[in-house]
Length: 73
Image 1 (cartoon, rainbow, N blue to C red):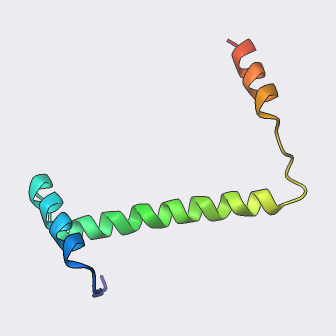
Image 2 (image 1 turned 90 degrees about the horizontal axis):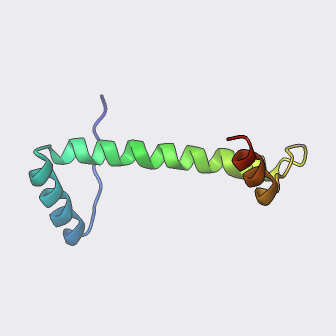
């Protein structure tokens, strides 16, 4: 496992320490979890943007999809 360091504002460190204390976890564990979630969201967003830019990917009409879903139950 690699180690990194970063400079963050004091108020962010205070919030991190408060959350770590409340959750009974280390700063490192919370930062690791936050980075994992951020990168998952980033990857999801990248895929979504790629699909939006793909002219062969059909655009669905929300009202039509909603009605089909509601009618199927």
